[in-house]
Length: 425
Image 1: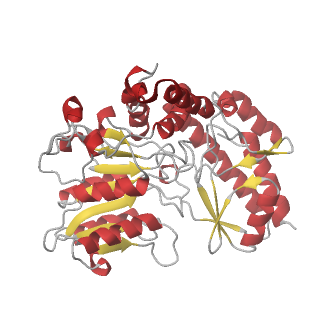
Image 2: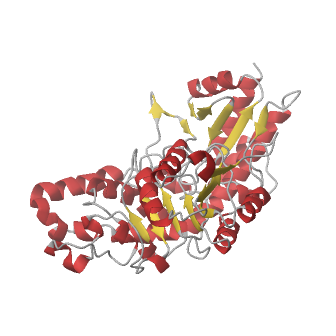
Image 3: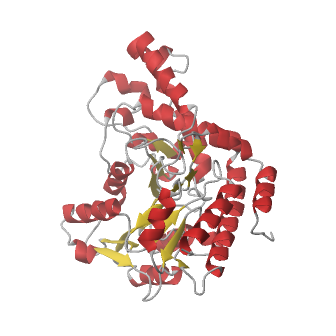
C-alpha cells in the first residue's frame, strides 16, 4: 500500500478497519477524561471490559455453591480449562490437547526442562540466544548446575555479529551443526524481548532435531503477536505468558505446549502433581503417578479459577475478532508504523532513530525497538509526559508496539507528529 503521512489518510485506514470496533472492548487508560496512547501491549496488555464480569461470575459461584461449583456452577469449574485450550491452540498453531494452562512462564519452563533437558555425557549443552530474558538465563543456569555441569561450558549463547543488533539465522544453524554431538537442547525465544527479532523457529527446530537435540521456545513475546505453527513445525515444547498480547492481566496464568508424541510416553521424566493425574481415578487418591495422556499431564495443583476467568475474557475477544483477521491488521498497522517513523527520521539533518528490530515482515511482530542515537532518555521522558505509554531499555532503546485489537492508525500518526515535535526541540 502507498501510505501517506496525513491525518486524513490515517483516519481513512481506521474507517476501513474490519476490527475497529474491538477497541471498544478494552479500557483505555485516560487522564482527565482524555484517552492516553497505549503502545505497551508488548509488556502488559490492556484490560478487557468483560474481565470484571468474568471474575464476578466466579466470585458469585464461590459464594453461592462453594466447592460444589466445580461440578454444579452454570459453567462447571472442572471443565473451565477446556474453554481456554481451544482458542490458545489456534493462536500457537497446535492441537487443543497439546496445550495446558497453568502456573507462570518461569515455572512452566522449569517443568519442561525436567522433561526435555536430559543431558548424558558430552551431550549436555543448551544453545540459546545471547541476551535472553533474565528468567530464562537463570532457569538454564540452575538446571545445568543441578545436573552437575558448569553453565560457562554447558550454556552456549549465540550473539549478534560485531556492529549488528540481531542474530543471523545462518549463525544459529552453523552453531547447531558445530555442536551436533554435544547438543542436548536448543531453547530460544520466539521473539527476542529486547530487539523484537523473530527467530526462524521452523528451521531451527528441524536442524536441531536432526542433530539429536530437543527443541523448545519461550513464546512470551510471540504468542498472540505473530503466526505460529508449533505442531506442524514439530516443536517439542513451548511456554508462554498470557499477559502481553493476550491481555490476561498482570501475572496472568501462563500456558505450555507439549507435542502429542510425548503424551503417552511412560519414560518421560517430570515433576508431578495431583491435578496432572488421570481424571477418571484422580479422586481415589492412590499412590503412583498416572499422568493424563495430554499436555494436562504436566499440571500440578488445583487451578486458579479467577486467573482462568481473566484469561477467558480476552480469549473470547480474540475468537470474535478472528485470529487471521488480527494478523492481517497487525501487518498493516506495523507497516504503517514503520512508515511514520521513517517520516520522523526524514525531518532531521541526520537520522535520530536506528531501528534494531528487523524490517523484514517475517522477522518482526508488533514491537519496534528504536535505538535513539541522541537524547534517548530525554525523548522517552517527553513521550511519557505527553501521554504516550512506551518502554525504556538501557542504554538507549525505546520499545513500543501498536497492537491490532486496540491501537488505531490515527494513534500511530499522532505518535509520529508528537515525536517530530520532541526531536525538533
